[in-house]
Image (tube, rainbow, N blue to C red):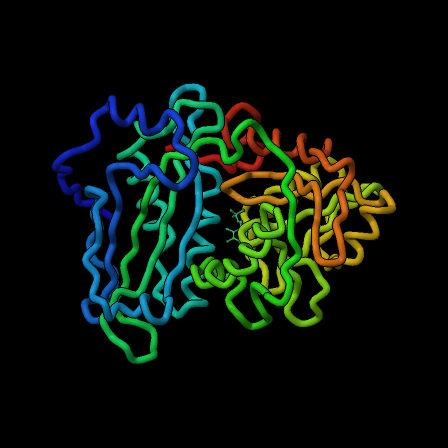
Length: 359
Ligand SMILES: *Cc1c(COP(=O)(O)O)cnc(C)c1O
């Protein structure tokens, strides 16, 4: 796949860029370029790829994504290694998941090697935007949406695939702090047979009201229970969960189709097993969570995902009251496994699984 380079009329001056990336926060500071690849069923599928200036799109108001939400995305990071080179973490897993999401949403699959080439091309063009600060990264947002102007209900015939980049600081200002979680009341994120395992915007739209409930109750995040029995823990709005028990077992909810198969989740399962822990993918209920936290059988709970890596859950709140996990702080295993994963990603620890790809 060849990427045609479109000239940028006014790239950000180096001095201004340095200001912007000094304290970028998350998801606000965008780089100069983006990759665009159009798809048109009537013109043979995927069209020429370009890398050009990041700029507003022209979109017909009848574009079917605006009406029926045919949209998928990915979230990845590029890290700086000590030699100044950039590295991606398990990008082929994102490419595969993007294809899986596309199939669920009746969208065309982008060849995985094209997805990977587009990510590499975008990062290489804007490598200067990597914040030179502790925990800094380039957050990569590949996404695809239905651009065909058509109001009938069927899969669109035209799509746009885009890779955007954003300068990102450490997700948590002032180090990793335990989060307080609200148990969703009266809302589910995903039901059996639904789109819970696809990385699609609609799942996030559905999570915003319960997330607002969480905020109203002084919590940072919302945890969703299963749609059928309203009893089993599924995941947070955008992070998977692990329950660390005193008997050396670690439980994470199984991938039954209602949970997003996180790449951080998959990596943690492997790393925890290497630590000699008995990791089980099995259902874990809210009652068990509360009882085991109170009895001391549960030591830690961690939430994980690309944006925040590994985060301790300190407190869980619902209308029935609150409970605290361990001492409400950051547990030993959470700290250890987070450091192992971050070390692999940033090239300061060995990478026995070949998870890191240099750009
Ligand atoms: C992206 C996402 C995750 C985390 O996946 P990672 O691959 O680890 O970043 C978890 N849950 C939901 C709902 C997500 O969208």
